[in-house]
Length: 96
Image (cartoon, rainbow, N blue to C red; front, top):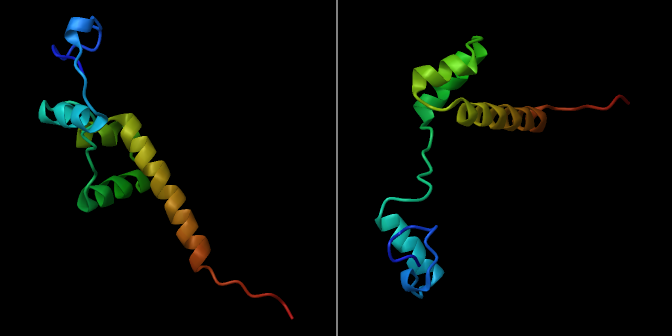
């Protein structure tokens, strides 16, 4: 673990022994690392509705304060999930 919290400073005097769990706890206590911001259900419905109405992802990103990349991934996952659900719910019958 880096004593001065500078990962570029790899001098022996700046390093201390620690487990992965200790390193993760140190990182979290100092507010670093992935925050994992989630899109809540109500916001998700608004995003999908706006996209289906033809609004550009760049405009949705500006309106919601989220990145284009995050919304593009979210919409792609939603479309894939919806397609799988539609396929699973479809009833197929074979001719006799």
